[in-house]
Length: 495
Image (cartoon, rainbow, N blue to C red; front, top):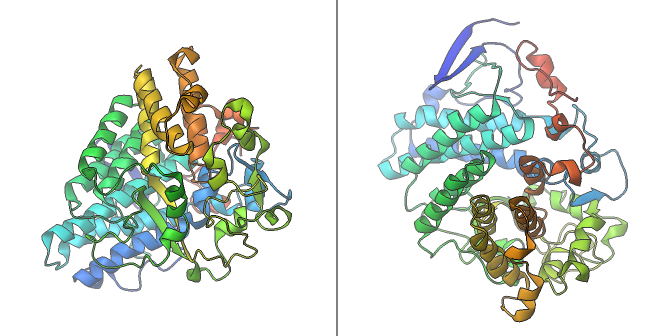
């Protein structure tokens, strides 16, 4: 049923060769219940279209937030040795039939963003600032989706116009991952900055603040250390030191990821910040547990907060290598991150569970939760690494010792805390210093979908995982995508 028709799509020097087809790899759900010609008419239509971008992204990230960014690294290991996807991922035994190798969800998000970019300008939205903000959100979500795609699969297909019916379904060859970042992701983020309203204070949706966070992360992957540093400075200027700040109280960080999320209901006013005092959170994927009556995926992975959970709940546990980071020999005795992020038996993550809970079922008091795609602590670690790479070691260490470790030690600078923290004389190279930064990041952001990407980005997977083949740092591409697009999509080497 292939109707071959070449379509050229250009973005600067980026040329994508596409063809139409009746294959369904971008069409596993109905593309639209309303034709595009009838859809994008009013503000209500626009809001519904933009909402669908976030719905698709949220559905995609519910499991993949952890499966893509966390489980293959050195923080978690299989608890029971089953053949379930999380257990297989923790052993780095990937196959091309696992659900995490499907890119359908991320491209559905991209397709919705493409539709919004293509059609919102046609709609009658009375407030021009709000109209531009909707378009800016679409550009930013397309950028974030492609950023995830290249980190997971490397070279990926690129689509910049929407597929809106079965007559214009597109296929594309895979584009070099760096080119996707430089020619698609960064231009989209810059366009978003031009369009997003200064009054947008959302956390469940994209704001200017979250664009800066994504952009700094992209520059980190491109190893443009000056741009990382400059972008985070722009973020700090944009926030004005009022809404989004580094939280100095570790107990409040714990609350942000658990009970403080209760009753944060959505509204239609982007100028209102429902998250209030949760100043660490920049961009989150917010879940109401009632949407998933079988329980949270967090419960499926990590279990609850009590000491008895290791016998049943949760499929993965913290590695001994991770828990040993808190040993006295590592100068972390008294580190309160162990108290708030690790359960009482010392082997399971309890970061997302209300403090002190001995929970025996997934229906804990936490009825709502948010996966922290970015929070201000991320930016502190990005800046510290960039400064280290720029030979500003003292500035990098100041961030780690006087912010990260100070908070972990209870928020009080004492001679004892400084004695447990490293100084410039402890490092013989920039890589030694970066090791120190990434180790602190490993602890602070455990379970937040960052560790695997850090290991791949910096090449530290070689010594810290069981993988010995660089090709297998990428995920395989699901076999169905290969079968549906044999002329353009080829499997990643090593699978």
